[in-house]
Amino acid sequence: MKRFSILILTALFLIPLCLQGRDQVRAEEIIVLIDNGQPVDFRDVEIVGILDFTGVDDRRLVRDSRSFWGFLNQGSRVYECRVRVPVRFIDCVFQDDVLAYYNDRNRDVLNVVFYENVTFEGCRFMGKAHFKYVKFLRNAEFANTSYRDEALFKYTEFSGPVDFSRSRFEGEANFKYVKFPNAARFEDAVFRREANFKFATVDTDADFRNAEFRGEANFKYTKFFGSAFFNGGSFYRLANFKYTKFSEKPDFDETEFAGSTDFKYTKVQGRTWKHFR
Image (cartoon, rainbow, N blue to C red):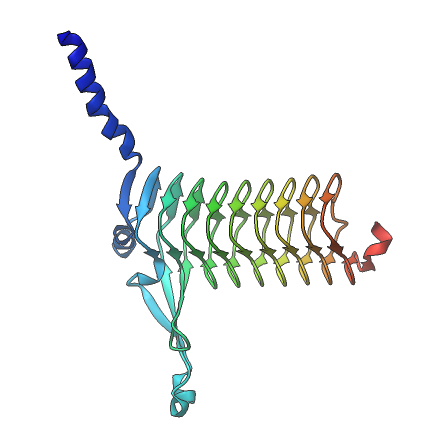
């Protein structure tokens, strides 16, 4: 009986430990690491609070248009917020927004520049993920990530290869006007809402093999200067390739088009799409 009681007490002690889950890190602690010049490296932790990279101390004014528009009380100041250390998150959960861009209505605009490699591998973004206008001067790794809200990468500048393979986008995935100077990997990605790559440019290979587009796939005016792989993919709504330009013949082998398609004015190697159907 005594032994049985000890087992019960031990089990009751262990239950709270099991329920605690992963360790928690406050978002502001990460900004402190960056300000102190220390690498950011976390695995299997939960980030609590809004992680705002525009809050770093290292910033400089890059443009001030207030002087010209001052008499109208308009214009803005644009700041560059510089993150000079490697940033690495593996299998982490971000409970709140992750922000690397800020605009307070034509006053101050804050854009983040990452000088070293940035990794968000296997992470879950429970809030917004805003990387609009961000500059990644080295590699950017977002493989196997999931986004519950909007994933905003509009006007983002990448310098190295970009990996979003096996990622899941529950909200809009906005890559409008993005320039991919190296390989862009989106194979096995799932887009539950609109996947917006309008006006994007891919200088080398674009890999969308086995990708699933549940909302509109918007590749209008997109330019592919390398190989473009869509084989094995699924388009459940509008597959919009209007005005898209392919420098090489794209691969649509075993691709499912369950919704409507628009290849009007699409060009492949300088010729209209109908020559390659």
